[in-house]
Length: 445
Image 1 (cartoon, helix red, strand yellow):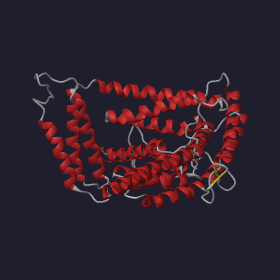
Image 2 (cartoon, rainbow, N blue to C red):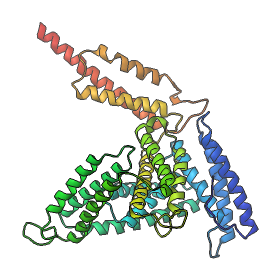
Image 3 (cartoon, one colour):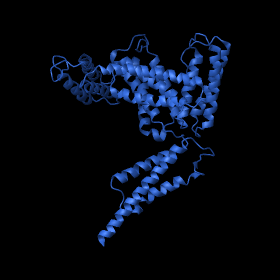
Image 4 (cartoon, rainbow, N blue to C red):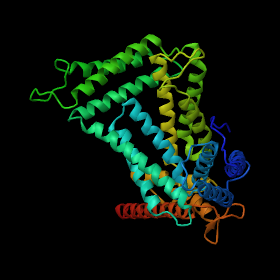
C-alpha cells in the first residue's frame, strides 16, 4: 500500500519500529485480502497487541521531545485504521479500537462541510448522534486497551465535537422559516450535482431542479427573505447567496452537460467508479460487505483529496481546475466519504462468520412483521415454512452456541436475541391464527 511522501525517522530506534509496523501492516493487508476463510478474533487481537507494543516503545523514545511527523506516524495510522475495520468485521463494533476508522471519516466529512459551507441540519444530526455513541464507547472502554489508543481516540473525538459545534453555530443564525428553505436549497444543489455525474446526462432533470430554485428566488422581496411583518429575516443574506449559487450552478451544469476536460478526465472517472461501487455496497452491504474493504476506498479518496493545492487540483501544466471541474470532483469525493460513513455506522455487532445466519434471521423477522401487520395468517399451517426455517437455524447451535469451524465467533448474543424475537413473532401469529380459526368455528355453529 502506498504511503504518502513523508520523511524517514532519524532515530535508529524509530527506524526499527517503522520496520516492525510495516511488517504488521503487510500482514494485515494479506489477512484482509484472504477471502478463503472468515477473519477470526484471535488473528486480529494478535496484530492489535503487536501494534500496541510498538506504540509503547515509540512513546518511550519520544517522551518529552517535540514530535515531527515521520513515516512511522503514517504507517502507524494505516495499522490503526486497518485494525479498527477488523474490529468491525469481527463484530466488536462497540469497542474503542473500532471507533478509530469512524472518527477519521467523520473528521474528513466535517472538514469538507466547513470548507464548502454548504450543509444542512440533517448532515449534522447523524454525526452528532454517532459522536454521542462513540463517547459512550470511550467511557465504557475496557481497561485492557492501550491507554495510548484511548487518549488518541479521546483527542480525535474532541476535534470532531469542536468542528461540529462550529458548524451548528452557523446554522443557528438562520431565523425560521429560513432553515427549511436553506435545507431545500442544499438538497437542490446536491441533486443537480448528482444529475451532473450520471452516466447519461438529463437536461430535463436539471431544469426541473432549476425551476424549484427559481420559485424560491421569486419568493424574495427586493432580494431579501422577509417575515409576515415585512421585516427582513435573520440570515436572509446567507440564504440569498445560496439561491444565487444554485441558479448559477444550474446554468453551468446545463451548459457543460457532464463533459469533463481531458486533463481531469481520468481523475473524474476514478472518482465516479469509487462512488458507484460504494453506492452498490450501500444497497447490498448486509450480504457482500467486509468492513476491511473500506480501507482501500478510503486510501484512494484520501490520496486524491490530499493532492489538492490550496483547495484545488492542478493539471499536468500546473494550472488549477476551473470552477465546474473543481465542484464536480469535490461533490464526488464528499459523496464517497458519505457512503463510507453510512457503511461504517451500519456495521452489525456480529462477526462476518455469523452474518449469513444473522442476515437470514433479519429477513425472516421482516417477513413475520409484514405478515402480522397485514392481518396475520388464516391458519397455523401457513406458518410451517417460517417455523421450519427457525428450527433449522436453531438446530445449528452446539451447547447453545453457533460454531463456525470449531470457533465461537463474536455476536452470539445478537444472533440469539434475533432468533428469540422471530420465535416470539411466530408464537403471536400462531395465537392470532388459532383465535381466528376458533371464531370461524363458533360462527359456523
